[in-house]
Length: 218
Image (cartoon, rainbow, N blue to C red; front, side, top):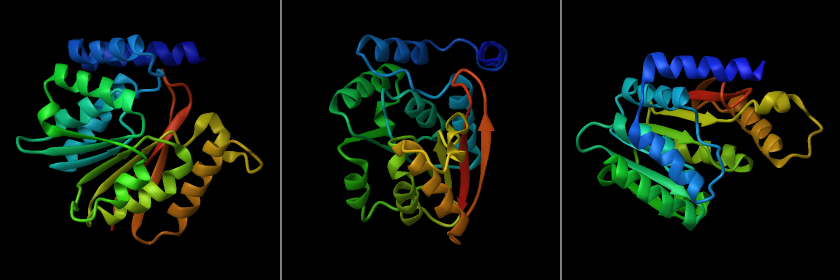
């Protein structure tokens, strides 16, 4: 079945996205520098692009840069004068991302900050509001990142959290996988937090069986 999911993703990309030299070069550069192949798929990148545009985002916050693949999609959604702040733990990943962003022609819109995301977010005192937040970092801290996204957002801010299904692992109440424990903690938070209206959508495709949370700050 997963082979079929991959084929459908390729069909979608071929019909609706087309070739993109900058994005292809980004993935190749990531691989050449030893980054893990855990970027969003092309179809998911375009979804983020469209969601950010639908939200009318002029300021975007991304938690988890990796090599900048999703960052490029989001930066392209910004209007002239827009800004994207992206947070990355690993200096090596951030350096590769800066190369990719520059090659894609969007580096002037992007501020890459290196260090633990929790520390970077805590230091962002006078930078609110952000209109759109994409969270795709360590899953153990997802609830914290969403809490910070609310603090740094406004009424109407869109929040997207990736990898929240984990091939059904989210249902495993006895899991000792910190990523699943963190994801379940995120759902517990979302179910109780009156500051948000949220849902989650399951996905299948090149990234196998997973899903994302889509939320709006009230």
